[in-house]
Length: 182
Image (cartoon, rainbow, N blue to C red):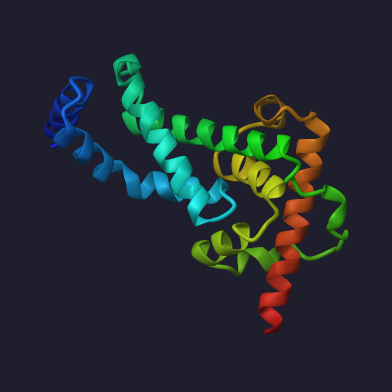
């Protein structure tokens, strides 16, 4: 069954490389829901997520011939989406839209508080984080990058990456407490 899926995917990819719109639509429909979720994790809002989605798919289609069948195709695509999200983050950083890490008060909350949440609820709270916090949190916690890699991607120091992750966790804990008090 996996071979049939791989064969179908390879056929769609070959048609996409030949710029066949029907195949491009198939590939888009196959990947868009998962990749839109990736975009939402990094975007400021749904409009920005849609912009990232569109920009990323353009890159995927323009670079399909560079995919070498080493590793999973979806992993290759996801990396393009993450990198495009980071480009959007950098653009907003240059436009001074980045939130200051000093605006969040230091609070002490038990880490068990966060573990009580369902994944969907936690993702809703993550989406409420200031953009800088959310980006570092997503890259570190969800995507598994190290602070050294994050600092290179975002053009920030490792200490800033660590600080933003720490502040993001505190901010999330504060949000969890507020939600539980309602």
